[in-house]
Amino acid sequence: MNVEEFDYDLPESLIAQTPLKDRDHSRLLVLGRQSGEIDHKHFTDIIDYFNPGDTLVLNDTRVMPARLFGLKEETGAKVEMLMLTRIEKNDWEVLLKPAKRIKVGNKLSFGEGKIIAECIEELDQGGRIMRLHYEGILEERLNELGEMPLPPYIKERLDDPERYQTVYAKENGSAAAPTAGLHFTDDLLEKVKAKGVNIAFITLHVGLGTFRPVSVDNIDDHQMHSEYYQMTQQTADLLNQTKEQGNRIISVGTTSTRTLETIRRDNDEFVAVSGWTDIFIYPGFEYKAIDGLITNFHLPKSTLVMLVSAFSSRENILNAYNKAVELKYRFFSFGDAMLII
Image (cartoon, rainbow, N blue to C red; front, top):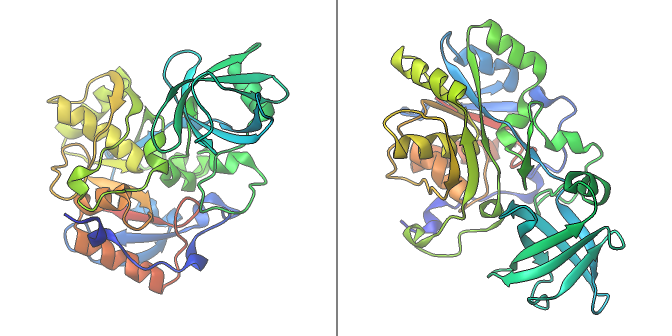
């Protein structure tokens, strides 16, 4: 399939630049997975689409303040570094701007030397492996020096960094938020539980793939970058029980979806496991894990549009997106939500 088949026209004015005051006040487009029928609701209505015995799966990754601004030691030139994935204890895959002048052996200084990053390997498209040198605990240094790595299409500064975290964010290590979960409040999750719906947590740390567009014409030629995931025995048991009882698994976000489908692709049932996934889901993919999907509206021609198209159909998704544009839904990370069920 050609990447152009997943394009749609989006006015720039519909790209949400700031979160709503209340997380759960966003709009909700409900799409029939098979029928393509569309309903327009608010996110608080989502509970009406859950049944007792269903299991809602949330990604509990927490975004690091992983964007750092510093200087190249040799020249004093300004440089920006976005930390993406921990390779080993102090070795990180990063994106640099500008990158072309940063070679193996060069050192970058952040916070007047509170963090020194030494380039130990050059990757393509601005990527590098950097070895970090610092005193104390890295998370404390990042909290002191780093900024929240908002996507490039968001031009506004974020007054409250916690608005780019889910209310259940727990496991540090992500370079971007699992944004479908941003709509949930503690109160709404309590109402979900009160209806008899199970809550399960998995972890996938969002990495490089989120920041890289599809640069090939034929999507079969696209290579996804790997991201770290883990599932506990408690979650695996709950999900297996849900399936055995004939109830539904509803995934919150594409990150949860990629984790669940990776595990079920490789196993006959859900198992406690951790590892790295580069799963690429696009039309033709056979879903084995999920029965419903909560997601935001994604960039044109992105791997995420392809993932949701695989869950319903390309025609249904593009029709829903065009209707959302017509009705001025808010798009992308701080935008409105879609339920496909």
